[in-house]
Length: 269
Image (cartoon, rainbow, N blue to C red; front, side):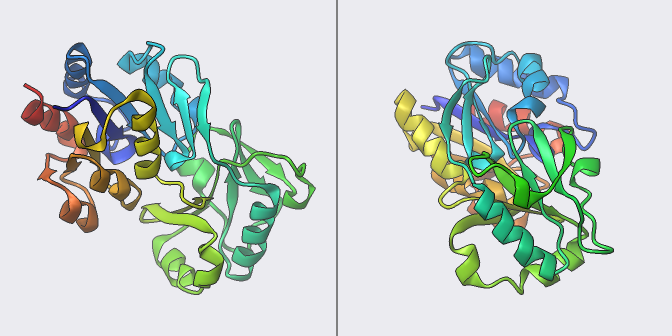
């Protein structure tokens, strides 16, 4: 019996135009009416989720959202942090220095801002704040951040071919201290070691007494793979990458065709 549905946001629940279709909304409300918990799992920060939470109606004290690709769990209605696994100033400085040598731009994300360095590598500026996030961007000197400044994740956002070519030059021994993945073809993310959507969803399930086999998860990208593999039923979007489709139990319609609603109708009667 399905007790929890965990859903990725971009290119899964949202269309290419960043809206939730009426069909998807109706399906989420139907699942909720059946007593099934609906958990949004996203790389976005909570501040970028508040309007969507309100639109969907996740307003009870027992509704949760997973943000920063698993680095945080918050109560949907209040924003109260339930679980947090974060990065430090020293992590930001280490990645900034290494990536700068590879002509890759680094942005750091905290609870309120996209922290952009005073200078990107010449000719290789990030387009994260312009194309991906609606958080306010703020220029900072990473070396002058307070020692206790909390960073939720770091991102490298640049043209795909250059990104892939330069990422191949990073030593595995350096990456081994973190969890890293691509959430889009042009977006590479760095979070604390062990952080991913699957691990965090498992911890949330333990806290609310829902087992992985009682979960249905829906996603499309590499950063969704751990929760697809975790759940009793893993669903890949029709627009998902091949690795997600290969791991899934079911492939639904794409994000522009209300694939989330189609999957919910298929499994929730």
